[in-house]
Every structure is written in structure tokens, then in C-alpha cells.
Length: 131
Image (cartoon, rainbow, N blue to C red; front, top):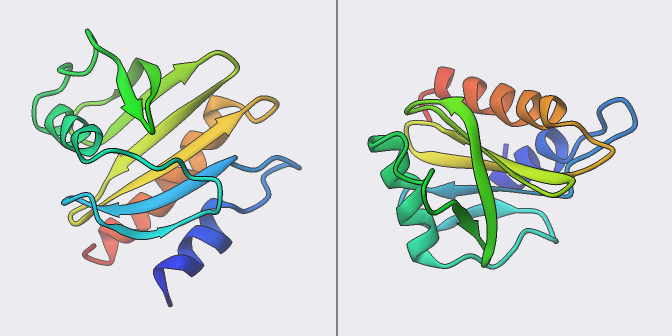
């Protein structure tokens, strides 16, 4: 299965009539494996800061999580595994696997919990597969 299929069929799927606004699978080095059409163009330093927070949980909290120049307030996550961010009526969930970062962006009426479920379920599956 191609990485794009994971984005299209698993991350951008319909959940109770809702779907993510954008999604991506990005290597730890910042390289794009696959992404949806509306996923923002991010800067390498934004991915570096996210990777640092997985190694040093809490490092993003004072400055916020930036993705494509958009700042998200960091909210509860799972240290070393999941980072969650909120901005207005939307937010971001980032799940770390052995080789990649899984990103999901959402806007209301999708809930943070629905976004977390979609992103983290795929991340857990990829972890089980060795990715």
C-alpha cells in the first residue's frame, strides 16, 4: 500500500460525517511521505521543534507548536508519543512512530477526540508494523 493511500483512505476518512481538514505522514527528517491537498507548507525548523518535544516533553509548551507558520497552543498529550495543539475552533494531533510523524488537522464541527482517534489509530497500526 502506498503512503498516499494511508493519508487518503485512513486519515482523510469520514468519521460520523466529519473529516480532517488536512493530514500528512512526514519522516523524522522532515521529508514528506504523503499528504492531503490542503496540508500546509511547513518549515524544517517546525519539524525539528516537534521532534525535540518528543525527546524533551514540554519544550514546545512555552512557545507553542508551529506548523506552516500557524501557532497552536500545546495541550495535553502523551509524552514522547503524541502532541496535541489547539487554535480557535480547530487544532492538530501529531503521533510519533519509529520512522514518521502522523499529522491530522481539524476544524469544528470535528472534535479533538475524533481527530486524536483517527491519527493515533493509524500511528499505532504503523508502530505495530515496524514503522
